[in-house]
Image (cartoon, rainbow, N blue to C red; front, side):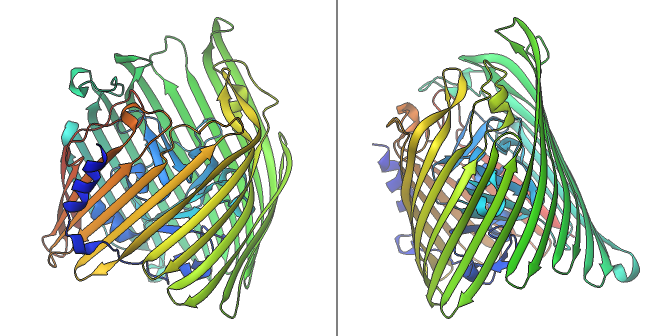
Length: 592
């Protein structure tokens, strides 16, 4: 029955437009191998959300952008600001390395990796998604892939103001200043303020969301980046990104309860570049506090790293030293009082990445050695080969090994009994991809040994091999003044005990159509269909359609209208948690 909604969405667009504009092949990425490469030179399956897409779609959150990517699904326990998880080809986001300009957003004090709910898109101009095992390049957190957010480098100054459903208000500014001799130094600053009364985080399946109290969010992001041109191809880059959130959520099975949280994410980096050499100092700090627990309920995490990288033609050599620290002050039911826990570890890494071409063949290879004070030594690698039949016609194969070290909070387990014996999980992944103009097909097969899972009130390894496999099929191109893209993802998972991994949809369809009606108007219609999941109930078989219209009033001013859940579909992403009904947002962007 629910599939009729997908058919209705397809019929809502002209039938002759099922294709999409292809990505420019000369775009340069750095996430795949820690060196600048074009799409033609990268063998791994890669997806780019570019500046034009980010501007025209007017996304509110990172997950709004990523949910349209083939092979990515997500869950969210309520509205904006609530606990959010993504699954990249069936692997949860604590197995995906998420970066902001190369600085790690993965929190050692979180069971979920990066706090996706607090990542602002206010100053982001491009998102690079590299799928498949990338531990050979990036280490433990990249077992499923890498998502790198690239901040804005352009010279424009802009202000965006948006208002809409659930009394949501958003204001964004970005500005650039040139200074010094010949204006060779650059300062980029930006910020975002987001307020929303929201809706109830918890709603029993089938019940009206409006009968329960709303859970809101207030979030502020401030960012700054300094680029000092030292001459002779030397640069010193300093950056700081600060996000603070305060929001509400519901207690377990208590839709009308009032629970509040406060969180902070602070990223800082200093980068010195001299031609082919780069030295980076980075620090990521995280703090999460539950405000209505009656006793202190605070968890903090910190990652500090020193990174060295040198490029010799097509070869990149690098070394890393990382320090992770986690502190927890939470109530322990076992002790009947608050328990303060702390843990820290160090890791050292060496890696080499080589990319080269031979006739019509492109090769990417990587090998990495990691030594953790807590988990010992792991050697991982990857190899990829791509054969170019023509400029937009190629066949590629990739194989990689990876490992995922448990986070410190998973070992400490402040909710119950610690598990100091929790081991790193290891994996092997093979993928095969074919691209011909706008047609794309990718098959992936992953085997995970000692999968880390929540069992018996603590995180444990599932002994044996868990399996994840599936494929992505897509077609896209431009027909006249219409861009269109249609993608299908199939996923099959099974842990070592024969159980399906939870919350992953077996079938997913993404449809995206953009009509450039005139030089002033463009209208986008996009739809997401989610098939069966292991949980069942309201999380199965639903289609959500959205509409975005942009009007370029003049060279400086653009107005836009967003309508989410256009047909007011009733569904749930997580059983028992609310989602937005039909909701509209009106905004204006002014550049000067």
